[in-house]
Amino acid sequence: MRVGARIGPTARRIELGIELRRLRSEAGMTLEQAVKGLGFSETQLQRVETGSIPLKQAGHLRKLLERYGIADEEHIATLIHLHRESGSQEWTSFASTVHPTVRTFVGVESVARSIKAWHPTLVLGLLQTRRYATAVFEMEKMHDEFTSEYIEQSVRLRMMRKELLTRQDDPVHLWAILGEAALRHIVGGSDVMREQYSEITALAELDNVTVQILRTSEIGYRFGSDFTVLDLGGTLPSTVQVDVPWGAASMSDKPREVGRFSRKFNALSATALPPEQTSGFLQRLSRELNDV
Image (cartoon, rainbow, N blue to C red; front, side, top):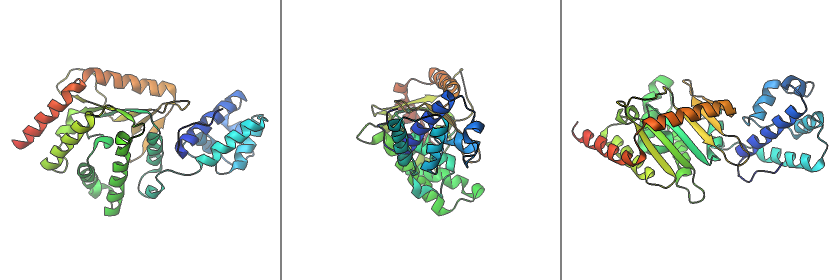
């Protein structure tokens, strides 16, 4: 197996997990059989295989490889190298700020080649302005007992994530579909919304960003929750992420699930306005605010 060219602990963890899952399958072992007597649980190995967590010790990796019948020293050395590079966590300065599964998603997002996202009720985080993002977290402050420090850190992380779209080297390709309700819901006041409309318009002019709007009056497919499909490129599996109400993110790289949500995205795109109409629609929304 080739060590992946993409940089970052999350990519290394995913790549190592894929290989360990393949080796266990070839050995004909269940999770229970693989971990028996090795000092860690089936759940831990399953999370390692999905790239959610790293193996804590290189010794655990060696024991697994021995159990799987791997004797080739070059193969073992490659996997040990992957393990060493997969051990750290990206975004460690935000460890106390966000849910662990959200940290995992942010790590996976950071190595994505392309992202497709549907957001029906709020503007997608990667498109948000600082003021809009702050207002979103402020709205939740009373209910979730957010501190000012939490909001500041969360907004800073969101702005850092936006750099994926504008970085000079290999910016991520984003295709976002926003529900009309996400754009009509006033967050932070009229000035914040005008700025947000302008930001979406500016980002949509980038060669790597496509934005569509799904009108509430259109007859066609709808899906109630937001979701994101991430193409990681190379040997890494595509992944789908769906938000859940308690602040976590449900993620899966199972081809069946990724395919299911990819079809949902295609159906939403077919119903939404063409991308070339996005700017005009946002301009009309901005003029409507002037009349309020």
